[in-house]
Length: 88
Image 1 (cartoon, rainbow, N blue to C red):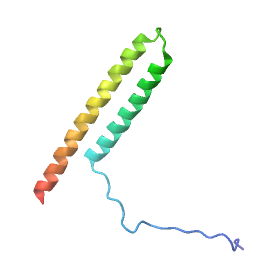
Image 2: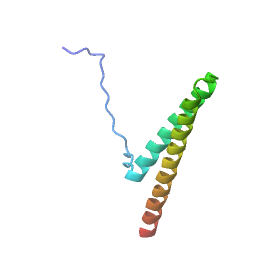
Image 3: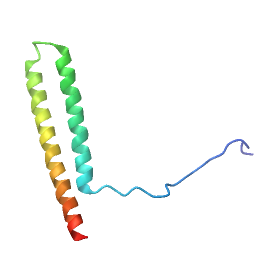
Image 4: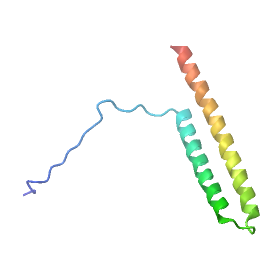
């Protein structure tokens, strides 16, 4: 016999969240990647090592690429939303 005090509650959202579009997903991914690269850059700065100069350069390169990727994703999202607005 099941435990009489065990209660299982399941709920579904009253208003399900809309699924992200491809452009929204890409923007979110690019923003997460940039945030991660910023954290890595900050960690590299804290080290204060003169032996890791190449790592600082590599960090700068990765940060630059991640920022560029986010810029492209944001512009694509802007185009997507503009097209949707114009279609209304």
